[in-house]
Image (cartoon, rainbow, N blue to C red; front, side, top):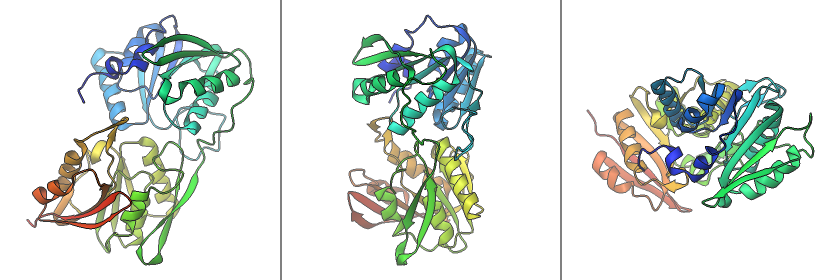
Length: 373
């Protein structure tokens, strides 16, 4: 993918930029992306809060604000921003007082729980008379979101349709929602179980907004059945999600575990799981463990293969180079990947040993060993 800004390549983002009549004291940009939106809203508002949950997007947005000298843009990384009314949130959150923002801007994401949470929290966070503007593609569910938003706010304005995308505006015209959406329970935990070979298992917590929060991902479940003994070893869980493989590593005797992921929500959840289990695991929010020191005996990973909605065929090469760089000489990596992705050729090129341990349910389990020094 080119390095073009999302403003240039995403028609739903471009549509948001046409809502140019707004100005005020504060604007909140939810899941704002690489900074293009923040730079456009900055001249019209006293303060721009640019939120992201993805580490790479947060870094890009922060760099953009610095390079443009946008002193009123404040970039934050974490779960969806919420009001300080919700004191039962499962993870530490980004909180603001109720009636705080004049405008909230949201490029439609995916997941009913997340979308309902945006409606609920936006209503709470907006000043009386403030607006929530949302854009999204028809195929992403913008029409169904429009119905829920209209019921919750009691009003809707379809401002524009272009390139199969819709731009919607909801205005806070009452003290309470007119017909509240169902409690999304977005900020509440879900407990799952990961089975290990020999009949053992680990229990872990996850939540909406994290990959495979409804049930343990089939690839992770398969990899867990092929993990080796970790007795006394250092382990890197690359792309950890909520951290079930990290917990499994400790269960299998690991002395040290580092869990990394580019999702700040996932990292917060992994930290919560370490804390709840009383384990000394560390968690790092980074793209492909960037910034992590090398020297691991074992690396476990169920790597992603998408960038946004598209299959990214450059990911296997970047994942494998990361693994090679972080393993100790003689160290081993255990990967579960979709069968259509060619990790075998890379494995034979970069590692002393490369073997396939299993092929099941559309997944391949690879074991790779780095050459000794």
